[in-house]
Length: 242
Ligand SMILES: NC(=O)c1ccc[n+]([C@@H]2O[C@H](COP(=O)([O-])OP(=O)(O)OC[C@H]3O[C@@H](n4cnc5c(N)ncnc54)[C@H](OP(=O)(O)O)[C@@H]3O)[C@@H](O)[C@H]2O)c1
Image (cartoon, rainbow, N blue to C red; front, side, top):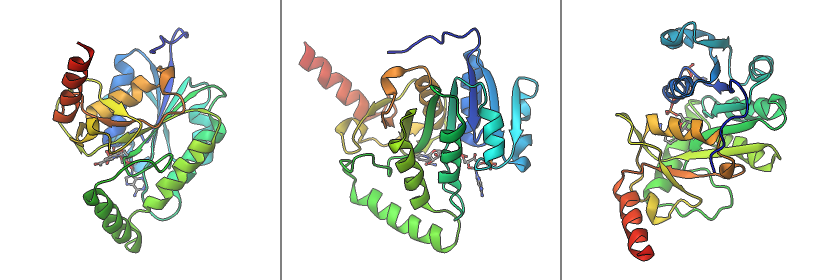
């Protein structure tokens, strides 16, 4: 059930604010009248120029514990883009800093992909498994990214007793909003079969999750509500209900 923030102005920190997902989240949060704080790498601050004067920016790597400690102070929610870049535990360092320094009781919402599993009960297509194996291997040997570190980041989040939500994104595409995505606890559920969400709506789900207590300690796998699989599910559940 969605809760209306109890505060006069809900304050949200967006960690990884300058990326594509991050900038969409900033816009959605501003649209809701939230006070917005963003963390992004120093060289990326210019990517947030469109929001100048409307958000407070803490420049720095997202795994910089001092930067995160200052940025999350007083925030009702922290929305974190978990990125597996490099081979120096960037994602797990980022997640750990957020877990350690966010206000007690703050809503913590993290982004990742379907490849993350909470309980091992997700069912993956051979295509998804092959992509993960090949991309994971190539990314690691070129020191471009470390998917295992995103897995470790999520392991720590799942084990924490904070008010977390891990949003697991399908494949993403650009384009105008199609509304709030639908979700399932299990990858492999027919509702998710279309495996496509607009990036703007992934961000919408992240921001909406910050005030949705039904998503506390859930790891929703999302898909566009307008996708063929979501629409087929909606019409079949409609028939069942009739
Ligand atoms: N791409 C997909 O198809 C897909 C699918 C499912 C889920 N997801 C999830 O969606 C989230 C956002 O992914 P995205 O692909 O849409 O990318 P994105 O929004 O553009 O975000 C990338 C983030 O990584 C940072 N970054 C880029 N290169 C970096 C580096 N070398 N060192 C440190 N930080 C670096 C960016 O910061 P700067 O602005 O400073 O560069 C930005 O904050 C991630 O959690 C991802 O797991 C993505």
